[in-house]
Length: 264
Image (cartoon, rainbow, N blue to C red; front, side):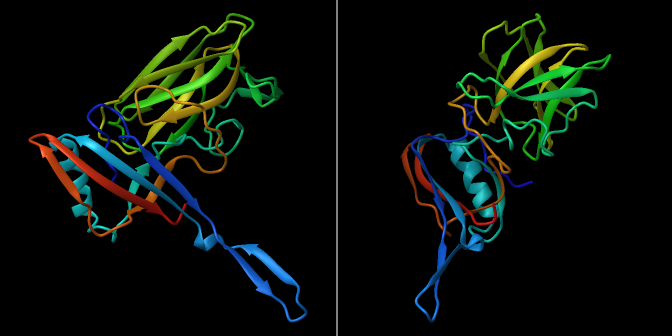
């Protein structure tokens, strides 16, 4: 699995990062002067510009190794959007992207911390631990931060879990009756390509959840709602066949790295 490397600090990118979404509309002028306008989905693209200043030699060597492995623009790699939420359908826990426990019950339309009714009441009706979880094709040895808003009226707890084959990290919370954003950062430390992120409930527990977010970094950023696609781009490419890098010192490198995805 070719993947854009994470920095040694556990960050996914050095800022500033510029992200652009490119969309094209096609206009067809008919003979009678009327026009038909439609979106050209095949022309859509998402691009990022990473102005990486102060890279260490090890960080720059990892980026250069990926550039060589992909032959520049030729081959694709997985890019984890440093400005996005890796999870898809971040508020719709009943969507097909989620692989929930068989006895997890979901009730939608619950009031949420933003004053709307987009939260979900999650009840574990089983006799064993069950989870609301989503599995992503991402490296098992990256640093990730998992966060979600939670509350409970009955003293139920919730455990945030990040797991992969051979390793897992978790953290338990008892949220209380008011909305609180709980989070956990960790690294499973395994050279795998699938990681599961989720909220785990004990038997009989009832917890309100809203807005789950996974990010390739050590702390949570502002919440970003997602729909059918999350922030994992498995068909990204370098946007250019060369990268200009400037050595500012023995272990200090500056580079501008441009990445594009046209298949997301």
